[in-house]
Image 1 (tube, rainbow, N blue to C red):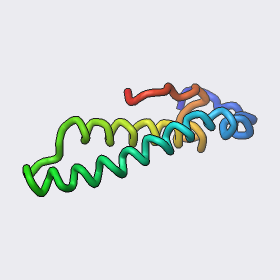
Image 2: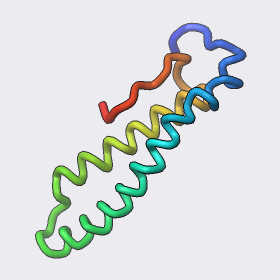
Image 3: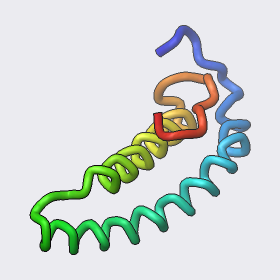
Image 4: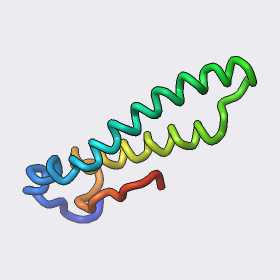
Length: 84
């Protein structure tokens, strides 16, 4: 944890994260479709396509960063938009 966390930020963090939530909802819909396609690819080729895997992992990491920010698990610093 980076020093002292602000006590009043939980009231604001839910509002600040609305753009993240909207984008993540759309990305999770894409993840569902890619997971179904990847399932067939695994059946045919025998391995998970790397680009699909990287996309799904990136969305999950982004989701975890946003969730950690909202629930005061890490920091008061606003999480970046993106997969990195």
